[in-house]
Image 1 (cartoon, rainbow, N blue to C red):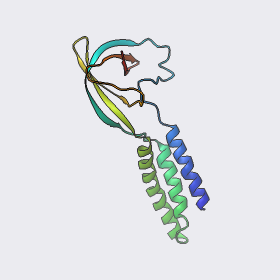
Image 2 (cartoon, helix red, strand yellow):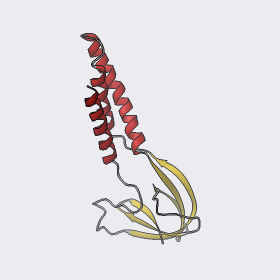
Image 3 (cartoon, rainbow, N blue to C red):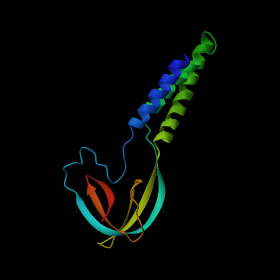
Length: 153
C-alpha cells in the first residue's frame, strides 16, 4: 500500500507543476501569437515584490482525496473503515488543494509605470531571473487580448 501512496503523491506533484502557466513578460499563449498588440511607452516609477497565488484546480484536491481515502481505508474494520476512508478523503482533499497552491505559487513584481500619455498604471508579472527592472528605467507595455506585459525598452 505504501508504494501506491508514493506513486499517487508523485503523480499529484507532476500534475500540479505541469498545470502551471508562465506569467513572465516573455511568455505568450497560443491565442496571443500573431495577434496585433498595442504598444505604450513609459518610465518605471516604483517596484514592489508580490506573491502570485498558485493554481487551485481539481488536480490537487482530487489527488489528495484519493491518497487520503486509500491511506485511511486500512484503519478499522467494517463501518469504522468506511468512516475512516471518508474522513481521510476529505482531509486529503483539503491538504492536496493547499499543497497544489503552495507548489505553484510564484514570486512576482508589481511595476508602477508613468506612461508617456501622463497616466500611471501598475502591472504585475512573474519575476524573471535574467531580467532586472530599475526605477526610472524606460519600458514598453505590450497589450494583446487584455493581457499586458512590461518589457525593457
